[in-house]
Amino acid sequence: MDATIDRVLSRRAQALADDDGFVDGGTYDGDQLDREERSALRRVQGLSTELEDITEVEYRQLRLERVVLAAVWTQGSVEDAENSMRELAALAETAGSEVLEGVLQRRQNPDPGTYLGSGKALELREIVEAQGADTVVCDTELSPSQRRALEDVVKVKVIDRTALILDIFAQHAQSREGRAQVELAQLQYLLPRLRGWGESMSRQAGGQAAGGQGMGSRGPGETKIELDRRRINTRIAKLKRDIAGMKTHRDTKRSSRRSNGTPSVAIAGYTNAGKSTLLNRLTHAGVLVDNQLFATLDTTVRRSETVDGREFTLADTVGFVRELPPQLVEAFRSTLEEVGEADLLLHVVDGSHPDPEGQISAVRSVLADVEATDVKEVIVINKADAADPEVIDRILLHEKHSLAVSARTGRGIPELLELIAEELPKPDIDVEVLVPYARGDLVSRLHDEAEILSEDHVADGTRLRARVNPDLASELTPFAAAG
Ligand SMILES: Nc1nc2c(ncn2[C@@H]2O[C@H](COP(=O)(O)OP(=O)(O)OP(=O)(O)O)[C@@H](O)[C@H]2O)c(=O)[nH]1
Ligand SMILES: [Mg+2]
Image 1 (tube, helix red, strand yellow):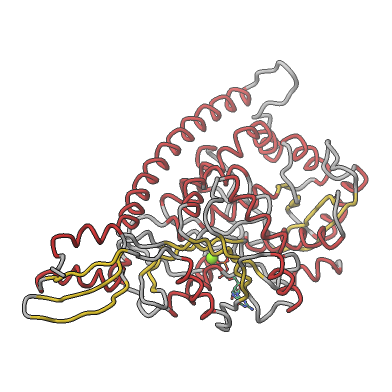
Image 2 (tube, rainbow, N blue to C red):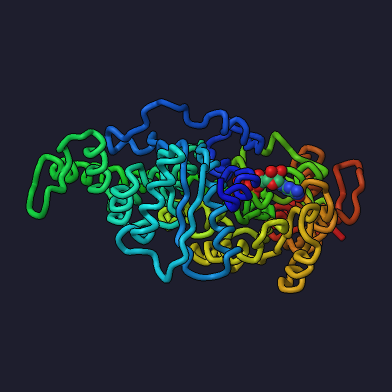
């Protein structure tokens, strides 16, 4: 086995993304411990997963078990190229396959015909044969014709990075919204590639079912492709409507949270940076995690408390990846937009990664795509326990709002909590109220949302002096205590 790939494999793959953010309804409690469970659901060998009805793309899993990776390296250092291939290996493993080997070709530009140059493509063919691989994964998004041409040379299934990522998302999506978003992205990816799929399937079947017999021939395959295309378009339209409906539902929940005046923190960052670990660490560190209230929230949103006792929400989000397929960005737009509406963004980056700065810019470019750049951003350099201190210092120096933590050991977490308390909008209206005992609900809201300056229990109720936000202030107007 090639030395590069050896190292690639020593870094275990991690799941690409937590899809918990898309869980609909309140039955699933957003627990982040489901990674193992998910791997247990990985594809079963030997089951046919070939797409029979093209409209059932939702249930389609790419059949890739033993893969060889292929990449063209056009610019940047050899480290960049190797990192990219390591990431591809991690993605392939996440999708449930075994990575056997990787080939990297240095070239000015990818070959428009076969992606790799024709000589390398033949070499790849030999490697595939020698290793007994059944799939080649290319580190790019291939054009439909490139994919077919390369498949013709290597004689096994060829898929690209986009299809691989879509496949992982499809495996991980659990909620109705998440599944719909992924299916939409898959169909949009598939649509321009229909002819290709048809042909390769007919080739596998050894039949002449699909088209491709040359220009102008409208065989039965052509008709089927037309039909499939129409059905896919219908399905896409329906999915878009469904997703829009679910977005409305989520918007309502979010706006009710906001009108409560509860400040919100969003955790975003590159996949595997430690976002979920951080969420767990922070919410357990919080004095209060109210399971009762929690049930009414979107499920990756958790409640916590600032060090000075104000409630806030903390949301985990889908992991980002370099060159996130545009179909996915589009499909997940509504979910990603939520990041832009938070009061504070914790942008988590893996300080122990070989290229943390690359991760930061990849995440920022996705955030820019969904216009989520107005929110105040703090770079949280995670895995400080494993990172090179020099790298941490370098990032701290370049990023004005940054700090180093370890979600695993807890290092830096108190400082992070301090920072959250400082950065979140503070209530600033002074009130003095006498709340009757019958309105215990208002008193507990004051405790959750306001800064209490004094509190007395008197004959007709609780007398409080507090600093509150505008919403609560107006609700308290009837109870204003005479000076
Ligand atoms: N050494 C070290 N490992 C950590 C730390 N935080 C998280 N990890 C590990 O990093 C891996 C990824 O952690 P997650 O919390 O799942 O990362 P994530 O950002 O939520 O990943 P996705 O949801 O897949 O995008 C896990 O193996 C964690 O145990 C840390 O502070 N130090
Ligand atoms: Mg996660």
